[in-house]
Length: 414
View 1 (cartoon, rainbow, N blue to C red):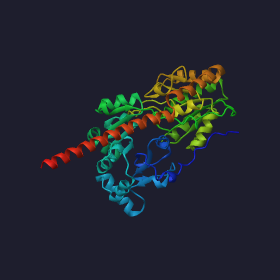
View 2: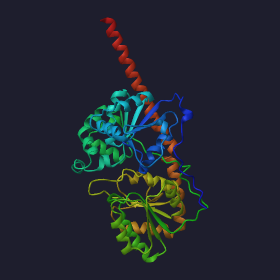
View 3: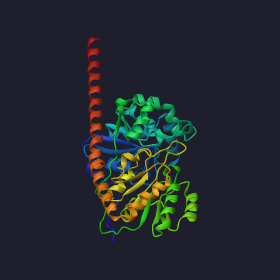
View 4: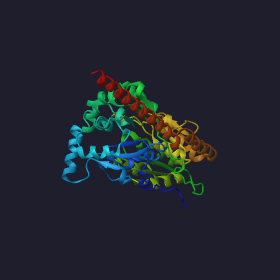
C-alpha cells in the first residue's frame, strides 16, 4: 500500500499572530494556482521570517491561511473595480490599508510581471522588493511578448524602472541569470537561488513496487517536448510492449498529442491534472521520469524544472534533453541522462538503458536522492534565501536611520 505523505492544506498560523519575526509579503497576482506549489512550499518553510500572501485575487488551486492572505479583489463589483484600478494605476486604498496593518519588512514577488505590479506596494510601504524570475518572464522573445498579455506588455514597458528600484533579483538558475544579465539587470542585485524540495515529503516508499512506466508531468505545451517523448516511446515499445507512458497534466496540445499517441503507441494514458499527492504516488510507482523540454519557437525554455529535483528525490531516475536550465537540475550520467535536444533516438536509448538494466537503475536512483539532499534541500535553500532577506532588511533599516539622522541635523542647523 502506498503510504506517501499527504500534501496538507497550508497550516493555520493563528498561534503565530503575536510573532515578532520580520514579515515577508509574498506577492503573486493570482493566489495561488496548483502550478505555483513551489511558491507556497518556499514561503511555508521560512524559519526566521514569517510569510504573508498578497495578490489581486484568489483563484482555484492551493489553500492558503486566510488570516495571512490579502487580496485587492475580494469579490463583487467593487472588487473588480479595485482590481482594475490597481492594475492600471497601482491604486487600491483598502488593499494598501490592510498591508500597512501587516507591517511587512520585505516584499517577494514571483515572476517579472508581478514584480512590476508590486512596485506601488514597495513605494507605499517603503520596504525592499525582491523579485524571482522563473522562466517565461525572461526567455520568451520580446517581439512575441509585446503581442501577448497586458500584464507582460506592461512589464516590458516598466522593466527598466523595476531594474532601478527593486532591491534584489533572484534567478532560479544560472541559465536564467545569464538571460537576465543580457536584458540589463544589474549584476550587483542579481543572485542565483535554487528553489528547494522538501526531502521528507518527497521520499520514496520502498514497499511500493516499481512498474514499467515512463512518467511525464507538466503542461501539454510545445516547450515540454511531448511529441518527442511519444516518438521515443514508440521505439521503446517495439521491443518492450509492456512499458507504458503515463502523461499527467493538461494544456492546449492535449488533443493533438492524444491523436499522435493513438497512432504510434500501444500502451499509454493521459490522466489530466492530478493533485500533488497523486503525482507523488506516480513518482513512487514509475520506473523512469521523462519531460524532454525544448526551446519553443517563442523562445520559452525550461528555466530549471523543480519537478526534475522532485523526481530525483523520489528515487526516480530522469531522462530529458540537455535544454535550458535542466543540466543544473540533473547530473548527466549520475542522476539521469540528458540527450541532445530534439533527438528522440538518443532519448529512447537512455530510456531503454534504465528500463532494462536494474543495476544501473538502482545506482542512478540512489545518486539522485543524494544529489537533491546535497544541492536542493528545501530547508537549506530557504535558509539561504532568508539570509538574503535579513541582510536586505538590515541594510534598509540602516539607510532609513541614516536618512532620519541627516534630516534631524539639517533641521537643527536651520
